[in-house]
Image (cartoon, rainbow, N blue to C red):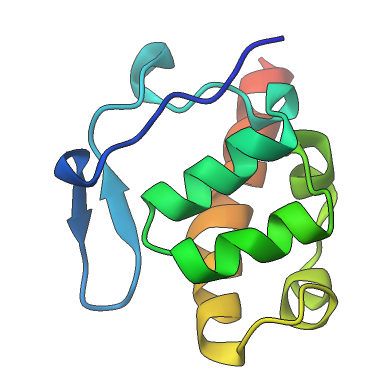
Length: 108
């Protein structure tokens, strides 16, 4: 099983809107396919992207990469029991782009 790369804070650039540019993830300039991530990889991804407190919600709900790719906006906003602000940022800047990346990489 492939695991997500360890992202360090030094490889990130925080943006004012809460999104983060990842600068060191590897496969073809993109993160490894989240479909291959375990629960710990998902947790580590969100910790590394500045959502340390919220990352535990993914662990508590046993969200692995395949589950992450199936999540809807409503799942993130209500199913994880996290505050609305971080939940919106997690979905818009992380979950949705990871889903889009996964779809693009598997449709070619």
